[in-house]
Image (cartoon, rainbow, N blue to C red; front, side, top):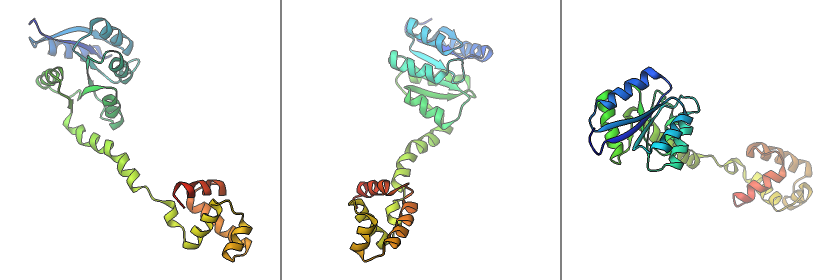
Length: 216
């Protein structure tokens, strides 16, 4: 083993797969596998005891690989986390990256590519499987787009409905609104029913709060 070998802990609850990963890494003369683990609890303990350069984590293991990633990321920030999993779910990828993972790799990866990306992450690079990267970027951007395009319910109100809502937001009763706008009280009640439906609120108090929030 070379003097400055990349020190690795491997965690997966499937012994045959885990053994194959360990053999693949061990065949590289610049890598040393310090421990094999089958659960989140075991890998967290091993990482704390051995402080490897890299920890490879599966998501679906007892205790949860994402929970292990969160705890390792918080307690041992110098350890680079790489998820090695079958999960292609956007939520899992985002959760892993938010937990501090530097890599997210699907289990179909070839031996040579796995060795290369482990070297890259050990050297400070990040890696997400290419077929996931575009989807993850889109998922990260989507909430902002959704907020930008969120419809304004106030815009659906007619001019008269907006006038009534403005007075209601000032604390006026239906009778006072009717006097102000020269409408019968029952007509104001009818307008208010439509306003509540359009704004999707339960009562005039919520309508008034929404109006103030939107600057009416």
